[in-house]
Amino acid sequence: MNSAKLRIAIVRLSALGDIVNTAVALQIVHKYYPNAQIDWYVEEVFAPILLDHPLVHEVISVPIKRIKKTKSFQLLRKSIRNLRSREGYDQIIDAQGLLKSAIVASLIKGKVHGFDRNSIREKLATSFYDTTSAIPYEMNVIKRNVLVIAEGLHIPYNENDILQKEPLFPQKERPSELKEGKNIACVIGASWPSKCYPKEHFATLCDALPYPTYLIWGSEAERLDAQWICEHSSNALLAPKMSLGELVNFISHCDLIIGNDTGPTHIAWAMNRPSITLFGPTNERMIYPTAINIGIKSPSDVNILKIDRHDFSIRHIPPETISRKAKELL
Image (cartoon, rainbow, N blue to C red):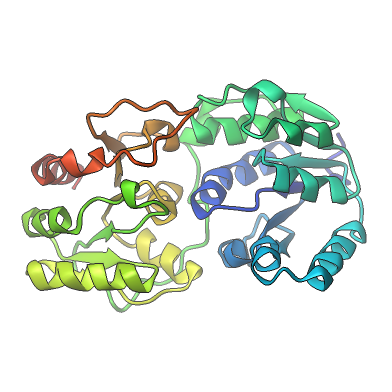
């Protein structure tokens, strides 16, 4: 491929953690195709994290959730028309592998590459691809994301491209809310209740940590839980309400992030900050472990092909185990 003319579309619509864990591919693509133009198609609610990214030419918001919520045929028709009217690409890559992402990719002009039938949850999606990659679903998610993009663009896979990454998103000045010296952040929410470490345990953990600990929240329910933790721990502080860009910057200035298996926790790895990710119904497949980015798994067994959302074993991780690992990382 001629990088001087290469136009690439990455389709990774959601969720936040998946987008964060795919963004490392931007650096890898530009390493091999420095003049390539990369557009990213994303669910509109997550678009802000990619806006003004130096390696993304254009962020295209796709309002799938709003279409589902409003059931607006007019909005659906407008979105399809917008996708079909865009200039064609040399390569389109569906890095998500769901039916919705495959349909979006198929509406854009250009050849589409994705996962093959044995590497994907929604097998019907493969009928929209021109070429596919055989990448086991059980593989580490970050490596999967990189491989499907690398193979689609005929780029050699090199583990060091991941291990030696630069921070994946722009970093700005230190937020004024952070205290002088070292600071810790805890991400208390997640997409499923069974992925959430109990607030009572978080209160115990905060008291055991050696530095001020900010509680990151995203919804009103999470804010109330964070407020409860603050009332039951003298070392817990309520983080401010933040946009996605502010969240990335806040985390990038913390000395340690501890949290559930969810997007804000994964941002720590993306920004090369130390982190501890807590796992109950999921496992370490969801992170890229390094010397400063580790996972602590509950005692339960996980079948990644059939996740048990009723597995609340995360509550059995002792706060003392987490605080001991935290002090080692600090």
